[in-house]
Length: 88
Image (cartoon, rainbow, N blue to C red; front, side, top):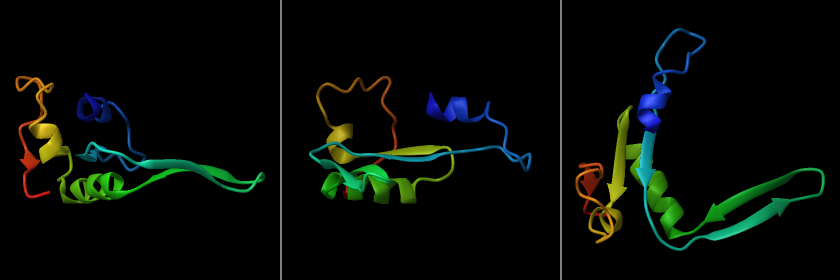
């Protein structure tokens, strides 16, 4: 649905917008960082790093999922993305 929605957003240069998406599942450390003047919420950990690497591998308009997501028993094979990277 994200990829479909991206096609409806107009880019200032007239080019289509396309997302590179990487999905991973697991534990993360979530925290607020910064000061009272500038605060930011962030997540860190292996899962975040894996999702970032998968996103970097994804072509425009593509979603790459981790092996843990692809093989999860609660994932409906009929609706799950078919491209995943089992080596991760």
